[in-house]
Picture (tube, rainbow, N blue to C red):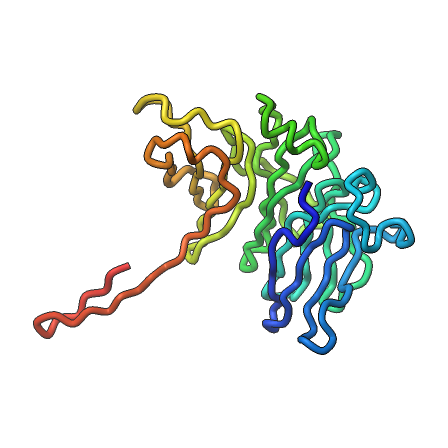
Length: 252
């Protein structure tokens, strides 16, 4: 069971980084003099005397375990996917998080693991890696043949009822989902990979989708079995401007 920060994020002003830690809190870096300070907690009923600073994996379901975080660069709101409590929103000044959704189709989220936001449309995309196993059983999950991870779901922040829609169905357990510079989404597929079966039956380590949920590209790790557990895929655009014979060529 991991105890430290899972990843980092910077807010709309470039401040931070912010990290999510195993006792359920979100911390913000205030520089070398002040160091890390608490920014937010997931629930008002969270017991501080029990949870703050704890590294005990047994009480994580009580304290929460935020695994996904992302800032909306337009509103400066902070969105958190907690493995045990669901999807939350925190205002720019931090504090106690507001619950947005904790279940879908009457099934509680067991392992929200990654999320991203399209700030231009207000749509949140997130993954639920299993509907059977909680985060504390992740080691068993990775060794099992469980395939109950959700479809990728999305809902629009501009509506009041947060109606969820299916974005894509995945062949295996998802981990993080990241948007590229074109507004497309890379989903990393974690655990249970068999390697390349044949040309007609792909077994990808990652899938790229457009905003309508259509598959644009699949990465199979060149058929190598060593790519069995992928956590995240980031696509970075590299632009090279080359002058050749008085002509300019843009390569990307």
